Length: 195
Image (cartoon, rainbow, N blue to C red; front, side, top):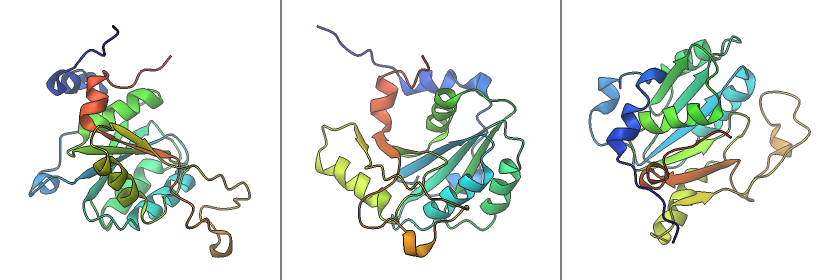
């Protein structure tokens, strides 16, 4: 019988010490932690990241935070996230890596920095419909034995700028490129690995 090894969360967090996970902001830590942390990994795609973060700011879910993990961007992405964080409607945190650690390592940093029960991963070139987080959480809550839920991916090929024109908006068909998982599921599987 093939079993998945378990991993204590404390061990997983300690393994990130060399990856510069920032100290948590005391203001963010006051009160109850959010239900969901949305992790967005980016590297030199400022305009796409800006559209992604704009879509996340319109979520209807009542309890979430956004953690952006930047992999050493040189296009102003870090500065844009810092400026946005000042007026963002939910906690927006930034992990600014000095170099590109890779997609999997950056997602692992986001998981380690999360304060929530569930973690959603959203690609920086994706835009989420307003009900995206609520739909994913509902799917997981409906089936407690499920550790991860993925979204339906809708591809829009004719993008000409950082925002989607309203007449060409994709609505009602489902959320964007992403997945929501329970912290315990990913930690049990020893995090993400690059091959």
